[in-house]
Figure 1 (tube, rainbow over the protein chains, first blue to last red):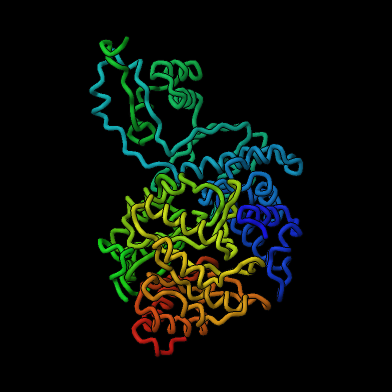
Figure 2 (cartoon, rainbow over the protein chains, first blue to last red):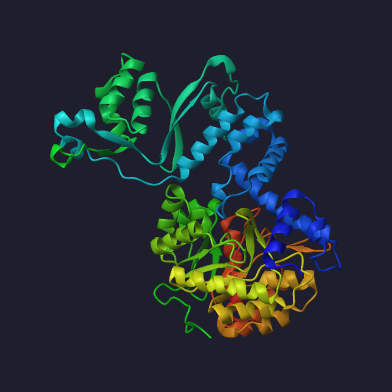
Length: 264
Length: 286
């Protein structure tokens, strides 16, 4: 008679690996065969987990088709498994997994598409945060501007790809009715993913704003971020960009440098 | 019977009436039309994320309806250590939404940190009984409140089980002090799948332990009933529910529907049937 732990390990391995022999003797005989009974559970497990992945990776699924997606999902699940009882945490490493999957390699843009979908999923469920009151900025002495550190909204993310992933995303959204041709040679894209009214929106960023936000997201100071933006794009218009980013809640917090007297 | 048992939360009770499980396709309609549903239940894990639309919806829902949190992933029967990330998320949800009831399942769904995201049966042995009872007790202490434990549908029995499922469930409730969420459909599914009398099951569950009942539809796979939550409640399950009401009295009852989710009106119609039976167990509804 197996102990509880041993039984659970055998049952899990039978469901995931398909070798049912290890657990067959633990199942009370009669009626359906043990294989049929385990098959019901295996179907439940893979269906639940596939559906969870399908919800997050709907564009990836459209690109590869249902049959290949199911194969991909099952391979991923066998390799990585689900990390939690919360199915929203399933699928974090699908993009990396796609990079290593030889059968997916002809679709060079697929891993980046999956990476964007995971980002959108993360943004959709990310923390809520209020906007940054402009008075807080007004209260900062001008000599401290350079050393300020702005914080991006916690439910947002920056994304870069050498493929036109934004266009791929757009034409594969439910209800999209325009021209669905994507020119893979049309170049890469830099995006900001944000949540507005509970929905995820993607905004294409020009070089200046991208470098500015990228620096802020890396916890660089406002001064350093301005320098980075101007290096990337001489025409970067800080005076127009900063108020807009605050107004639209892209930047939601700031940390002023500690006063001189607090330093050691 | 009634609201006197210790684990019922008096501050924000779920009424002893028929409610429905709230699922994503119905969020908008429920918020816009506010149908007169006595209470709603959601899956706890669907709200483990930090923010966004699900919480915006649940905040509004909670403003209008009593709410029950029903978990599917705590893996109470697993031999892994209890997952404190999960427990802390649940505790946070309880603090935020002050649900009238909190429930989980008599099952395991992970081992070796590998989650299978399905409700898997335990062997009904002394070892499993001691293990899960102790864990439920710990969880109730950790959450600072009692929980209900639901019987699950199953498609196999373990050869070395020594305790009938109904005795196992009743003993878990006795040892841990938890309540029972009696899924009447699951009792019927298991009675058919494993060849026992559903009435025997009901008669072994202590009356005062049952704090909620679930109803859902199953599918007949030929040699096995599958608990799909994808159809209307079967006539024979309505009849069993009437027997359950006669034994356990009026307790909060929930219509669950998780696959091929129909129009909200269909769920409300099913809830009306449950309400009719609850008020008059001799009535014919199906």
